[in-house]
Image (cartoon, rainbow over all chains, first blue to last red; front, side, top):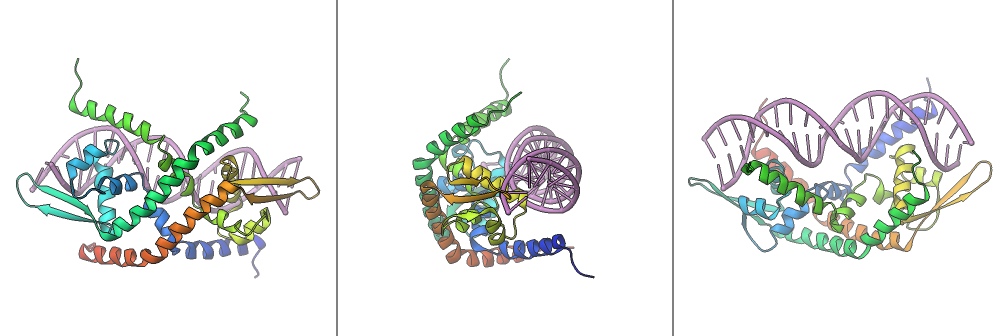
Length: 135
Length: 135
DNA sequence: CTGTATCCTCTAAGATACTG
DNA sequence: CAGTATCTTAGAGGATACAG
């Protein structure tokens, strides 16, 4: 039995999606687009920070999100975690060299964003006004 | 009645999240991290493309996702859409100057990714092996 | 050929409560 | 202080069918 055009297209899609999942740039996007990732990296730019200091510097993040972001950055070798076993416990986080180099990309994005995002905002408004939603 | 520490923290969180939503860099991340955004921009780097050509160049994207990605890029003024009213209809898409300038950021990310993502991959494997999942 | 309308699934992010 | 364990929810992404 032969495949229909639709079946062929879908098997093709899956094949290409599989290779897409291995694309380094795609992986970077997934890594960096976590809601708190860039803020954590930025908070560490001036050196070691304790967990509670990060909470203060990034007030929007819940404790759970902060911890899970830190875990995944540590897993990726972008930050290091130092635990001091005392009562109460103390943990410090620090950027690795790799983390620092990623930060450069973040700054480039920040710069582009600050230069262009307001125009994009206007563009959105204008676009939405041309096709208003009638109620 | 006074607020509990928890209530205070939450209202603070909301306040900071609100300002976070206006941060240009955050907006850029949200814009660019759509699954097909960079691929569409890249596909247009050599000039105008018809809808069906984009489908061929980006086989992983379903028709719906391709169209909705194109719409949001158009809304942001990153691409232009030209419609030729004939039977059948023909539409061409093209990068705007702003789209081109964003592409430069994409290339920077691509370069960093190709340089570092494989090391990050190893880092992940190593990290996961230190804390294996017992079944 | 190009585009829209539904319906469905999966997961990132958040709320809450608990522990060493 | 630092971290973990559940439960819930909103929305991105996808499958499918249809239309100008």
